[in-house]
Image 1 (cartoon, one colour):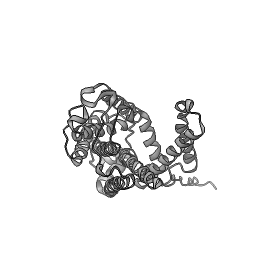
Image 2 (cartoon, helix red, strand yellow):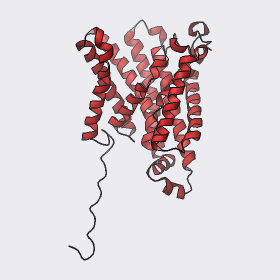
Image 3 (spheres, one colour):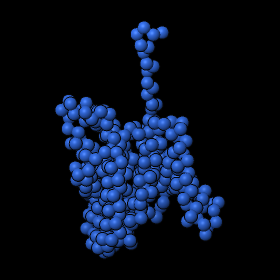
Image 4 (cartoon, helix red, strand yellow):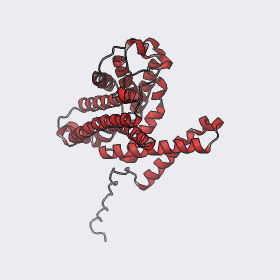
Length: 319
């Protein structure tokens, strides 16, 4: 029975990561926007929903006690709006410059969450966040499977929507901008406008994932949104296959399984007084797996195979 409850908990967490990875795949895999500040957008969504839905007497931050669905909708709107503003200001940058800027944004968001105690609870975080089916919490199996059903439906809806968008004219423009911006611009497409749209939508999906995770766990704190989160999600996308929504989901489940398994192995094999230091072995295990995947499947598990250049034609008059 405990195994079933944990299995549902594991899959729920993996699907929440899948939702974040789908947002990153829209930004990077489809559009080529190098966002390494995704933890900031996840945090914005989580805190927005937590503040709006947690009762005032429980939150210690002046919560508004609104319904959970309104909190999730607000999380998408706020995270998407912040992403649009940031995108309008930074998407003229490219590659490593954009990465540095988005990383700086994530650091700013975490510092605000850590220091704006009256709004975010500061280092103490926000507790007593309402959980879907909270009345079933006394039965872990039923409670975990109910939450798994909700998260699975949300993830499936956005997976299908993103699959449709990728095949739509809008998605084809994004792919064209990723491959050759000048060629797409020559057809009258505004590169800046389309990039801002993709960046905002990806940020909104990440914000929703943060809100779903906050209500699933029931507690959030600034240390939940460290750069380790960004490392995990990027690894999930690379392993599954950048540019593939199915790969984003598969990579999330696979990498999360390895992350949890390596954590259990560390707990079992390393003495208690050294586990804090040995926890870094989790990141090492993910790094080793990433190297193996890139050597065997450079495009990821479901990312296809790299195109081979056709052999050059011999020059006229030569054998």
